[in-house]
Length: 536
Image (cartoon, rainbow, N blue to C red; front, top):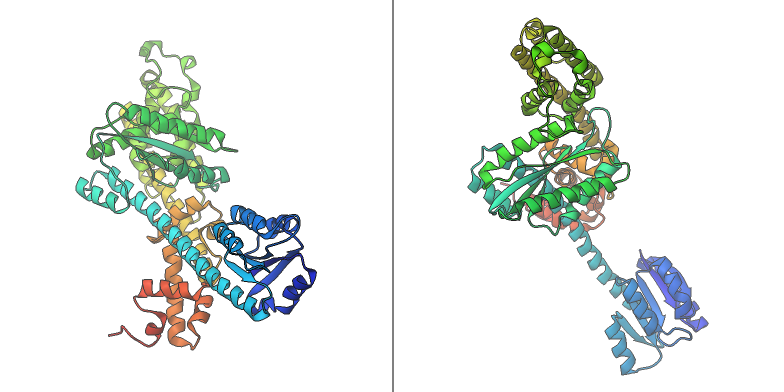
């Protein structure tokens, strides 16, 4: 119902308008009244009516002055001016202000109702257009987000021809032409196994698009659930400056976030062509995990090597063997980074100490205990690491030499990451089963949306959007629309309900929008579908 507010200094006229019209019968709700513009204005600000009916000549503040205030603060509010004077100047000023109707007194109830219903139609059309725009905007945003993730995967895989990548980028409105490229990576360290994304993480991700909206040379890509990549495009002279500007903006954003999660920002090395992006990405990820592993030192800094004869346990830096370092990698790392991480981990300890069989035994036990604890932490019934028995058979030979030990640890980390991913995938399956059941039971709710369903999944909307697309191959809006259309088709064929009733039954308050969407999805209007047109 549209809300109506009345401003009239003559009490009898005010009472007559208020009481003679059956407001709700015509789709309106009478929400307030006042005797002049000065009294009316604070009430109008509070009630925010859809339509204001006001006399033009009133003490303290007249109707034109009030109309100016309304149009400035509440531009969508429609205004009906009532005037006892057929004065062209008044009418001209009302038009300039943006008043919808200028009516002369006296007027009958039927005249006023006719004008109100005419304005109601205009409001309905505006609301319908706004609904179309909002729905279309949601679809576009989800489509772009999903398409950008796919494009980035192609870009860093190194397996897709550059012309094909450029064609895909052009379709979603991204220009990848530049003299020089670089990458900036942002890792928000979240424990995907035991905690949900924090509100702060979601806020950071939501603000990223806003921050770089005016930066055509900095393109954000969702590179994973916990990782965001930024493609930097520039010329040779300014690539470093643009890269640093991006990194500094991200650091400032993360620093300013309330209860900020642990985060890491790293920059890659500039490359001269798109085909070199995969190598740039590989090195940036390696740098990322070095930074995650050794946050207090430069990635290039390693323990100084000593002579084997000088080896002394007291000279070792115990912080380099902190179990938390390994756990961080097992939580956030990817399979292809296991070898580089292991190499950096051993280099940080120093080859001198590792040349000792006794010390290798100690280091290996420390790693094994950490991995075992990580496995136990996953603790999903029915899951065991598939390659564990074969790995355990190699444990004795692993201690025999440094190369054997390093190869064993690489395989151990890889098997653990495979195990982690299988557990996470199954947990996502459980979450998705719950979500899909919820959609099936609640698709008829007009208020159902990405944010609402994300709350059911107990994760942030950004996180949920990524998982949903990965698990179903569709955006949330696409899936919801398909579910609604499937049920609409069934109702059209199996019941005698009208199109308007079916629209409401599948979650659309506006039957016009339902018909528009039905034809867009099915290629036929609801009426033609019910009549069997288009069937072979």
